[in-house]
Length: 209
Image (cartoon, rainbow, N blue to C red; front, side, top):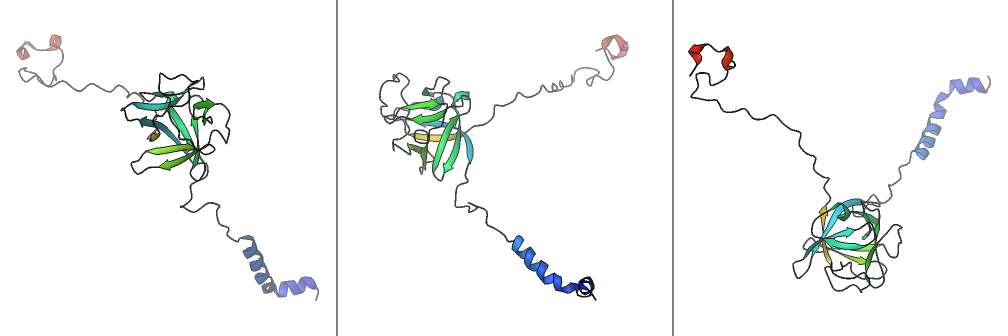
């Protein structure tokens, strides 16, 4: 009896070997950063950053096409921002309309850049107890502040709003399709209040009021 015959007579010897091989291949591995206590890498949020100061000045942070950063009284396409997590507690801020990253110079002034610089464009996000957030440059440690609307870009950043409330970036509402007009109330004084007979020309004179 050759090797082929012995293999046919004792097929059960291969079962344990196959089981061991399959167990080695199918070992489970943990998913990186799968803990719910960790922030998801690459998490993206679309927000409008709203702020107010001691003089009750309301403003939404805007990154404009020319790279300037200012505050606007109302939300606008330039104030819709994309906040993306770089690592736990650190984010980058991108203008959705202008595709410019929010960056900060060593003197604290803000500007929008078409290129991401990790040193100038990374901000540490701190959640306050009142729901507002504070953002600080990870490299310089300076808070994110808006310049007053009447300030020149050459002036150093003066004290200003530093607390921001991230408002959800809701998509623009689509106009509702025109619907059917509601039916007019029946004329209870008419001999045909439900208009079942038809126009006046086809009416019998007996139905005339």
